[in-house]
Length: 238
Image (cartoon, rainbow, N blue to C red):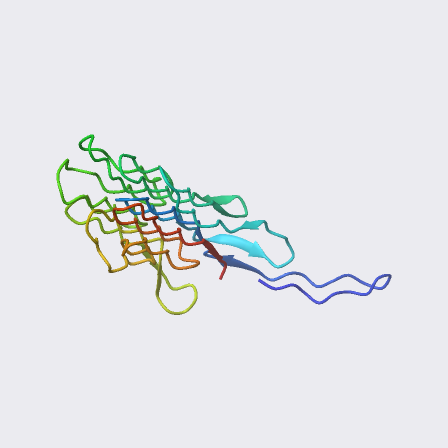
């Protein structure tokens, strides 16, 4: 989209605007990773709205969500992103030991020892998937992964990797966004990032998600270690 040339006051008016059809990608902030045997944070919501008409002659409201902060208990929820009334929900924060992950664009992972099996946080239909479940009451205590834009988080204690994000080519190259964070526990969990910039497992502190990825933070290892912060969101109009 582009504006027409300006006219001169008292002599004439501006030329018409050029209107185009855009496919904006709206990604919100990811949730923080869990504290002390924590699960991975859920990725921020991924919204690709094809066929939206935009004009250079109009103003649009744009909000980019911040990543959730890692805390004790259940870590911070990611901030929502918004363009022209289209909202991507923030990722769910992950639970540390004995907490269930939060719901969000994608759900946070869970580490529910010693209380038995538990679900991860729920994702939002059309934006992301749920965090992995916690399936055991025995060692190893590795929290489940946070949900990603295209895949649920992996269950703990067997794996704990965050769910994969989704690709976008709006910036030219293929980039992945909104990957879930990896869970951690009484031993080091997965040290490979999920597709989409989620944080790695604690070694000992959980890894921060990549900036502007909307990825979830990684969980902190046993011994009072914090998880990583969620990645900030991004809004791309092209």
